[in-house]
Length: 115
Image: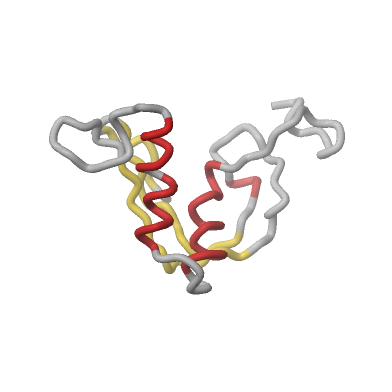
């Protein structure tokens, strides 16, 4: 945590991306009409699973129950202090985005719930 608390130029390489990737994609692509929601979801779920040859990224009998439940229209402001991650480095701090994750379910268990 101490390393990640350093100023951006002094901190180890890397930045938070997972906590903001859906909202940033929805804001820049879906809400501007540049991409359909189904295409964004495919690129964030099925496509990476296929590249990794993982039996994930889709809803199917026998597949792992890994789901994200989100509101594609809920607006919020990116605040690194609210991240679940130890990392706080992001160039998107203070940016208003649309698309709020409500639940994350991994292997059938709720591992994140908003609030």
